[in-house]
Image (cartoon, rainbow, N blue to C red; front, side, top):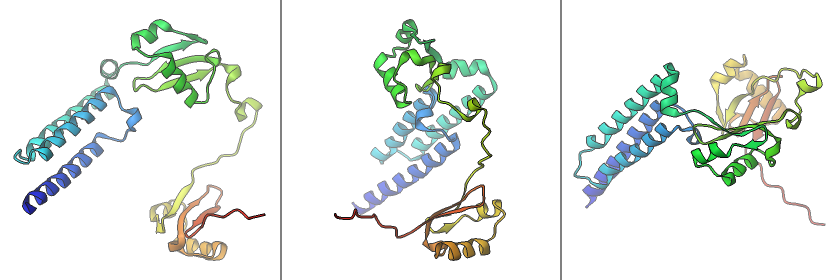
Length: 236
């Protein structure tokens, strides 16, 4: 019995690592950003990986080989869609306009089998509550709703007021959970001595005592120290 359990354990670990590596090779994409083809591949990979786990008599290669084949197929089609716009339209589809100048395109919504409740829910997630304020709304190929508000309903941005804010740049994480990011420190043209001196003089701690620290583009070091406790409200 112990040998059987060890066999199941080892097969699980091996399949997990194999699927993890292969999914990583497929590329970075959020679950909500998966195309229909990507979703089908992900579901099939999950099913194929489960077969050798439930049936230990099946060689593990019979599960890994089809998964590798699917990943190669997905990568081939991804390359094809990258090079060919026509292939991209066939494989991934095209966005569909469902609101135009404040009017719901009912015919398009029926064709997509997309109802008003789903549309309103996705609009509310973006802080939009009135259809008449929308210039265009497009249902993307991944099911996400993209909304363009009418010009007089859009949030004011600095350029609307003739303002030009200063360049903000990108914050560089230097410490995460007490661990130094040496590459970011070099990218910021700073050295370890500067960081240790700044932490000691301004924050009274060392690298190991920091849970998170970032260097702002203006040169300011923002530090969050370990051991912070929740403040209890004072009793009156």
